[in-house]
Amino acid sequence: MISAHAFCHALAGRGFDCYTGVPCSFLTGVINVAMAEYTYINATNEGDAVAIAVGAALSGKRPVVLMQNSGLGNAVSPLTSLTHPFGVPVLTVISWRGQPGIQDEPQHALMGVITPDMAQLMGMETIIFSASDLPDQLNAIDAALGRGQSVAWVIPKGEIEPVKTPGRSQPVPHSGAIQTQSAHPGVVGSRTDALKTIVAAQPPHSAVLATTGKTGRELFTLGDRDNQVYQVGSMGCIGALGLGIALAKPACRVIVIDGDGAALMRLGSWASVGYYKPKGFLHIVLDNGVHDSTGGQDTVAESVDFVACAQAMGYPVSRTVASLDELADQIQQWAAEPQLTLLHVAITPGSPATLGRPTCTPAEVAARFKHYLANGL
Ligand SMILES: Cc1ncc(C[n+]2csc(CCOP(=O)(O)OP(=O)(O)O)c2C)c(N)n1
Image (tube, rainbow, N blue to C red):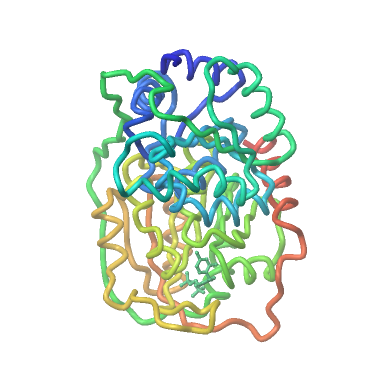
């Protein structure tokens, strides 16, 4: 057994400087120490925590993701289609509920049996925590991350001493008036029109993050730039990725371009964004009402008021824009007086007939983007 303080201290000794995750009672001590003594970013879903960690890592941090093994299921998509292709490995600390031979609740029985195999199957270096082997295990973690492999550090019951005092991450209060204006106006134009407007209106020191599917492909086709990320996989995680960057790099102007389907897939991440209220975060939802990238099947966005959602999740500014000019104006307004803002933009479905795909690999995109953040900001 090790104390939670000693555990976090050992990680700090290896340069791990921030935490994100979703709680588990087996990890109570670590989470409480992380919240009280380190930077802890409160996620609502383990998959979002992985994406937040990737954003932090791209910004030069060394993050740790804390989760219960039941949350490994929630994190499969980003652990296979974000960390792996982009070459941004993360350390996950995973509680081992339902470990064979240890009495636990029925809902953990199956996941308990498959946890190490599942992590291994996802290509993760899988290490069962042992306090007596701590230096060797930390060496193995460093080695795996160094070769681009994410790590599942699986923590059996009782291995880390709990800390009773509950930790609390700090929400950011908003003092000014809430600005919200919902409407269901007509479309402002195509996705390409909206992307052109965003690219032209972006302020200096921007990071432009495009959601999965045709949004990234169109952004690339309009012009490939070092400050752009085309999130080819991990649908729904673009907001969480942006949150990790915005919190680690407050001087960066993070423009997150979401889709209606992707946003709805992980709407819980909006609550984390609204909780921390990063001023340099602009969230733009390009709403065509369909999963355009997969053939135009309806999303359920028709009955959703994204502007009201953002307001309800704590965004101080959320509004629908009625035209491309208004989109440009709103971006400039946010750039002049940054505060967390959501812009809802109704667009037509469809893409240009000659739509390219990024010719640079995700790993190349991540490497040059990390360089951009390190040098420009
Ligand atoms: C977890 C996951 N589920 C499904 C997909 C397949 N997929 C890729 S893009 C996409 C549609 C995204 O829809 P939306 O965010 O509305 O953007 P649009 O395609 O309309 O631009 C889907 C379903 C995926 N990549 N990942």
